Length: 165
Image (cartoon, rainbow, N blue to C red):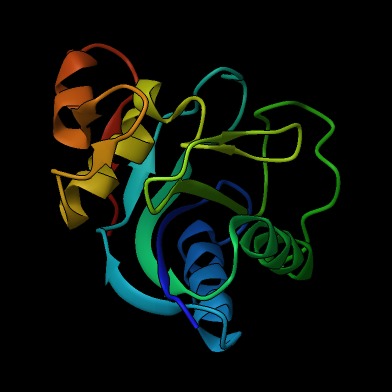
């Protein structure tokens, strides 16, 4: 059985945001389908795209898994539903738990169900900053830059990200 490396971003802006993220990561680790290899710090992050909502808490984890990317996606959606997430009435709106596959090995795929690398990750400080905590040299196979270079390209304005206690 081959182990694959994936980076998963967890986020929440409803209820106990930090606990929601911790519980989501714990559920993934306890599923038996993923081994937690590394974790970033937790960050309080300004909402992007839809602004009229509370700030998020975000954290990144690096996992090893034998699941293929579509099986992993199904597992993440199951964990989100168990945390109380239903259908989202507002795109990029409030959510109790969001678990996104950012990278899966060096896979590049673009299907209606799943796009890897995550299609907006290079524009999002709340993804790039935590992944840099784990490994700033993680390489984006489409943009041909590492995540630290992508973070540096964002500049200093907007998308506030502060360490969460």
